Image 1 (cartoon, rainbow, N blue to C red):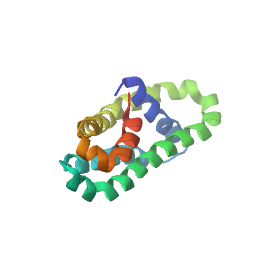
Image 2 (image 1 turned 120 degrees about the vertical axis):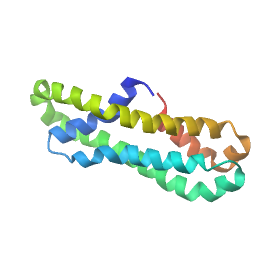
Image 3 (image 1 turned 90 degrees about the horizontal axis):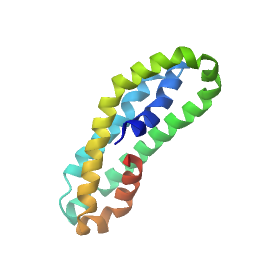
Length: 140
């Protein structure tokens, strides 16, 4: 995952936080990504893929919702943030530096597992659509 992609995912959070949003949302995408990674690590064949499919679908939807929520919050906060952008710039840069390693690590681990499973045709037949959705979310 590139630094620019990570900033694109995190910036909405920082704008929302600075404009009165909830800071607790920061952990959600990384926590969901870590849960997804854990589930994906347990998949080795079509049988384990089939067993994990419901949880993968639920978690991938949660990750998608969390990312969409951050983007939406940033869009809503954008108008308010324009007036205070200069003051926020330093805070945002510091916050990006603080949170980037955690989220980058979580999404990187998720990306590795998605790539591993995309190369397994047996597994791909069972959970291919979920893997494609995850691949789109973690692509750099």
